[in-house]
Every structure is written in C-alpha cells, then in structure tokens.
Length: 197
Image 1: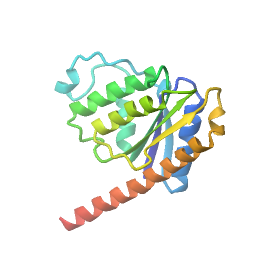
Image 2: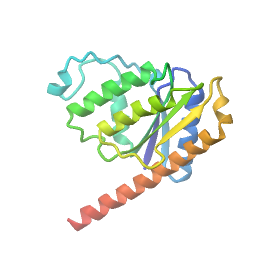
Image 3: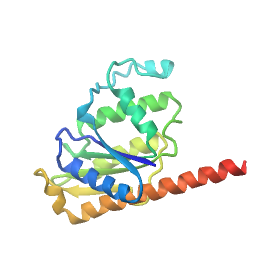
Image 4: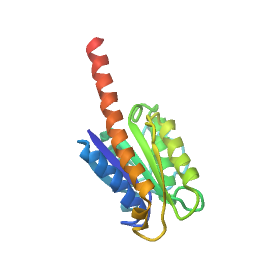
C-alpha cells in the first residue's frame, strides 16, 4: 500500500510540509509505504485551456505534469496539503488541480476513481475551510473516495509553528490512519468482488 502527500506550499520545510509529514508518519506506522511530493520541486505550467488533452489523452505542455500524474497512479491514497493564500489554495496547488484534473477528465475519470484521499489546509487565521473545499472538490471531481475526518484544519504562521496546534497535528495523524484503513477496506472489497465474479 502506497500513500503520498502532495504539498502545494512554495516554502520547503514549512508548516504545510510539517503537518503533511505528520499524517504520512501515522500512515507509515499503520504499514503503508509513504512519500512526500513538493509541487515547487517540479516544473508545472498553468493550464491554457487548449482542449488538446481531450483529443490526445495527454497534455501537450512540456513539463512535469505526467510525472506527477504517474505518482498519483501508483498511489493507493493521496493527501493534498496547501497553506491558505488569500482564502484559497496556493498558485502551485491550483495549477496542479487544473492540470491533473483536466487530464483525468480527458481520460474519462477512470484513473483515480476509488483511490482514497484527504486534505490538509494551514492558515495564519482564516481561509482553511475554502482551501480544503477547493482540494476536496478536485478529489470528488476525479471520483476519489474521502474517509470521515478527511479534511484537516491547522493554524500557524511562522515556520514550525504548526506543531503547537495540538488539535491540528492530532487530526493529521487521524487522517493518515483513516486513509490506510479505508484503502485496506477498499482493496479487500475489490479482492472479494474479483473472486466472486
């Protein structure tokens, strides 16, 4: 079982990375293989709405979109994380949502259907609800499954401050465990279905 965290923060080692790692550590303790992907480490250009992907089934922009898409394909569970910038996801996360989302739609929404997902948002004061909502909307659009407790809010500003949000950190650990449990249940159901048909 493989669980990945995808960070939309442009700040390496910042609060979003820290709390995503907390969720991943919890998932690892439950037996999952885990890894963190930082979108700012990749070349990812904005969507141009050219529509080529709906004909080609691939994106004509020459960047790392397909690499990230493949990482998601290989994962059983995905946790998206973003700080709130002006009550919304970061530019990096919005580009990810547009590019990966349109490509998934162009490929008939089959690739991520049934994968388990959750989201984490970090804010200085406000914006966590909107930020989580944007990421959850993406996940439901590509037909991922969200467990109970599938969204986490955390309050922090200075680097490392998120560790002082005890409820936020505990919610992240809960999310990591919940995703592993749901993946296990989903995979068990698939095996039962395949042996009974």
